[in-house]
Length: 549
Image (tube, rainbow, N blue to C red):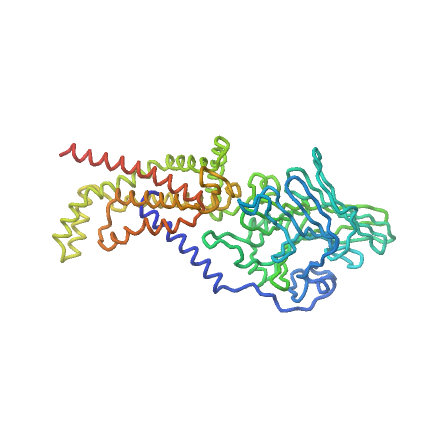
């Protein structure tokens, strides 16, 4: 992981990925509001309310445009805990606004928290209700009655309950209660149904997230992350359901257990239905680039004189991996390390252990780098030894090129014979590099995805390891260290290639200038350790040659 070849391989890997992603954005199919289709029952009247397959409510996943995206505002119920500020609208009992009080939008605006849910501009709201006889089953278009306009978690109070009530025309009363807990990003949903009428009542509880596709707005051009839907089931595990997927084909899936979410860089909102039941998962494409992902439960039947409840859980907050692991199976996968999750998770665990010692993520990165360097010491030594031996043969190679300047075939044969005689493998430095590339890429995704790195200070001018170095000091040090590494490595045999390689430190300095400083810090420390190791091996081999002479 410690020479120009490794840097070049990694650079072209990332360049290829970024070019493909940009091509998809520029020329790939765009999410569009689908043409309207006819339907029956609740789905036709309210395009954003799910139907139930095979029942009078219509077919789940029927794409209907021209409605469902608008959000009516009524009375607001304000809720504040120690970690979040929430506004619930009595129109549907939706969670329309959610601020994460411990996560500022920017380092220089500590009093302006991240707004995860909102019903303004880029809509992102959490909704719930019942599917059934529309006149007698409250959904997220139903007007609810609030007991109070404000709720605040008091000092020493562990739980805060916020009830909303709806009374139906046939004597059915539904009490929707949101349960907030101290220090938690979990919001419990309890819907208590009391049937004081003369007839049985039956409906399905649903929970869903509605979001407007943000497109390229606020996207970092140098760090590509995923914003969109996610579905987790025990059968298929973690699946990304992008806005493009939702626009082209509405999802309809049944599974025991599971959850749905809308995720973005560092934060997510996820509905986790009650356990021990079969859930129906769905998506809907609405007008104005609004999309819905949700789940509905089996029918809840309440006979006259009975009272029953339906539950679900909403997680709305940062992607704290240890918290997500205990919230629902697979929810920690929303910290998306991709195909290298098996490698990335142990690396993050190692970072956590060093953070416990130093209470500083910058020092944790440095000591993880030292640990990985020690782990791959023998592989790196093999690579450097191969390069040092190649460097030792440079004078003989120059003589062969001069001797066989007009005959390339004879030159290649003579070079192979010299390598065999000197017991040097010109490709000996490549395999150790290839083995270490997955580890580097895994560490890259750990530093990009971990919310723990967000606005984490290191020392001096480095106040946010997830942002670029404001003074470009680390990228310059990285460029200088790369230049020194080049001097310690054998130059390419092709003069033109050697000339091009001289510009690599400058090119990569500019490239890394806009990368998160935590990642550049890793690369700088890795380069410095590599220089020491390579210098020592070069010195040892030169001393060995001198001793033989």
